[in-house]
Amino acid sequence: MSKHRFYQVDAFTSEVFSGNPAGICPLDDWLPDRTLISIAAENCLSETAFYVPRTNGFDLRWFTPESEVDLCGHATLATAYILYYKEGFKGQRVQFHTRSGLLEVTPHKNGYAMLLPSRKGEITEPPPALLEALGGITPREVLKARDYIAVLESEAEVRSLKPDFRLLKLLDVFGVGVTAPGSREDFVSRFFAPRVGINEDSVTGSAYCTLTPYWSERLGKVELSSRQLSPRGGQIESHYRGPNTLLVGNCKLYLEGTIHVPGES
Image (cartoon, rainbow, N blue to C red):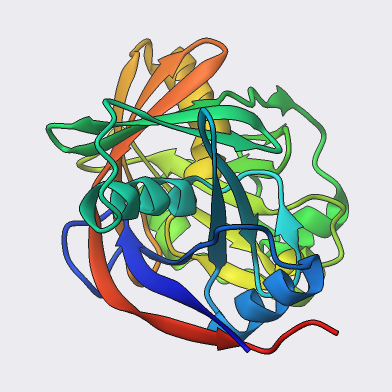
């Protein structure tokens, strides 16, 4: 039996019970992948992040309750927050070595600033299954990068949408986002990823790698304010920088403790 520190952090918010919760588990060395997946499944959060120190930063990996993913924004932000707030990290920036390359997070007046790779979407013909899963609506346009992003006409459409998660799960993409102009923010969005065990995500940092380039070009703005209209909700400030997207958000610690992991034979 091994013991490991564990934190649960609400990301992209300044208050507990809002934003997107992430599990953070510091490790000295990597546990077997099957153990990491079991921990993530036990947590039953949209993402659990594990990190291991290295000479020039940290190795960072993310797991949903069902699988490892290539990029997770909110759990990266939450990990940086834990390093600064609880683990005694003193550097001017924290560098994470990940499956999506080198990611950097720095303290910011509004929390933390996180640099992620942009994933500019291409306009595509939506598959009939996507439109059916979204209740037969007709989007203004549909983008495809890692995910499908359906662009709707109004915030009210985004709020009222009741997708068919069973059909969404059959689509050959990580997830599906919907977005529209916001009544108070530049844009609003929601994000669904039942294929990896997340029906509706609370705040999806990685989705903004596609949303930010789209809205930056459409509105002619580099700095954008947005809100994800999940039941918990979350506020994101994003900056389009061509090959990179900068996201700014805050975090709040909800839980800290110790997990007990059975030994590997």
